Figure (tube, rainbow, N blue to C red):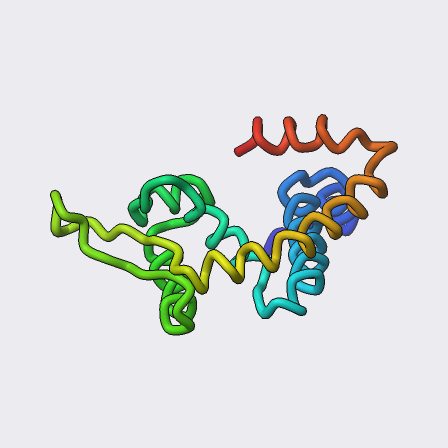
Length: 145
């Protein structure tokens, strides 16, 4: 059996962009979950509701593209939002295989109430990242995705 030297573990810990991105994503998720808790949303639900805030109801595939998630995960994430009356999922009028998702009035109200919490958390984060140039970080992350 081959062994991987402990030094390799240190190398991966210190250099692996995937590991660092995952750790940062989990830390950001916890931070925004806490910020959105007063309105009863998780950061994932906020992002999903925000992806629906557009002139015409998107398809599940369009939402999946925006959020870089698979359609099955989107469908599962929509179920509690639909149950809570925040979204509606309807069959497309042209292609009955396609589902379109829309914010309800209750969903729009929930999203609007969450926005100040998101903005405040983001302002705090941007202030903390000022030395790192948050805009450059955003561009680099977009480039990777």
